[in-house]
Length: 134
Picture 1 (cartoon, rainbow, N blue to C red):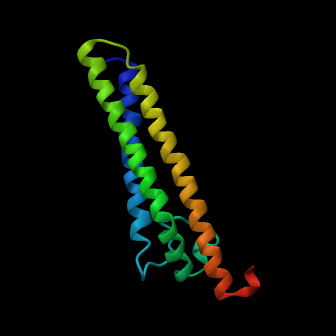
Picture 2: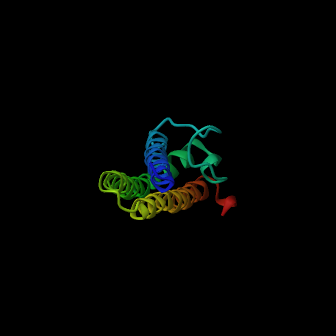
């Protein structure tokens, strides 16, 4: 098994894990009763300011987190299929590596965007709760 195939497999599987975990944590913190915590969630100054801001931020971030997960998983699965083709047909694994990197890039960009969306929503809640924080 070539180094490029191993690289693509590792990045693709890591991308799937990271994307599903990010969406899952975001969704679970969007439930009423979720509290700001230092372990898991989209932690910004605004989202940690109150339980209401925490939930509002995570609720707002669920849609972009879900889109991120879908895009990343599709790219990662395509990468895994390219790895299989590279092994079975003895062709280059470069497409697999490119798709794996695209999947990881989708996780990084999508998670960052989800965090920005959460922060904006939490700031709105914080401004309503305490007008002095505007």
